[in-house]
Length: 279
Image 1 (cartoon, rainbow, N blue to C red):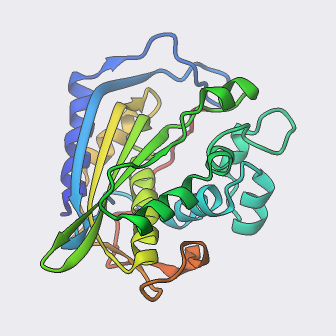
Image 2: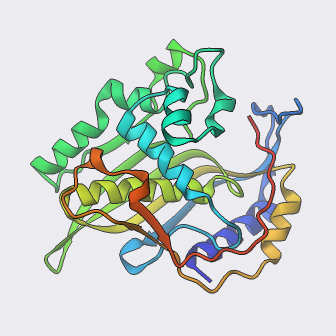
């Protein structure tokens, strides 16, 4: 059993037992019905990556390859163009959020990263002074939101800090989400931002340190309660999965590819569960 398995079960139990139902919900299922959810507010978790604690459950398979490709689309390609995500990476799940017939998700995510040159600025700040306390990614851009329609970013803020311990520099990261689907997206979002943390650390030849994860609204949709009970009844796999980035220290951030990542010692419980997403 991993630390992530323990936290996963605790969160599911807390949402099912103590959560309240959403009101005036925005999302809908593909059949047109309103997608209500049961939720709690203020969920926090801490993982020490340097000690092998990775935020991925073994209670069901988590498809992190596509998640890492999404991170590269946002922070390397810095675009909202769905054709890039579809054709370059073979990832299509964002297509459900296409705005009209624009071929984009609106002025969101990668478009905001490019607009503010966020990654270039953070890399420069860390190069100039690793100890500065201003390494912040914020995708919450009201001006961009007013320009186009589109899903507002869920994982909208990431902060980075460094620590020197016994002569080694460790890069820590904190991910903040306004909203998170506990059963479907929780470990996908966590692991893709761990991947981003690893990419920045590798750029400088640093080690990865701690990963802090705060979610304001953590929920389970009302068509997922059966799957929630199934996950609570599953026995976690006896493995300790780790994400490895197989490139030399000092590799430029923009030269790192999704295929450079390897998830080792991961033997999740099967079969996979089916989830109808809320759009």
